Length: 153
Image: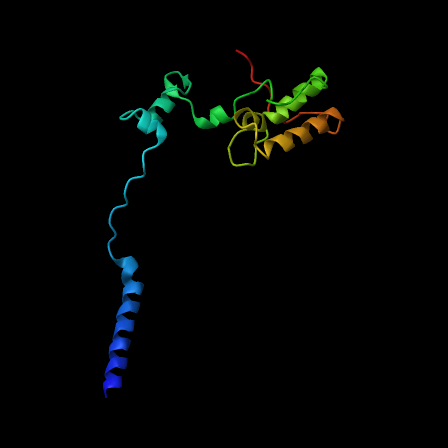
């Protein structure tokens, strides 16, 4: 009889443990602790780092410029690319494509913009090299239908 009692107690404890595990996620959780301060916050306590960064963004008529406009801005040069082998017409075709095609690394920039902001991008570099080769060898001869250089005025 003593053995039966112990088996019953053990079974009851297992049922309670199972219920605790199953219902545990339903119990209220304490509020998460705030993340540790960043180095910038430690260097300048009390300053809003994001507000400072946003204040440095270019403005258009007093309103802040949408980040998509920044990511799509036109680049006349492409970091790390020597455009001297191209004729002026080929250079224009190359720049139109580089300033139109979006990088697929997830940054949201055009290929030229991605290369300007991240020289080590493993996506924009090879795509720009392939574009350069295609334009230089004549595989791409026209930029019809591709974004044109914005007017300067």
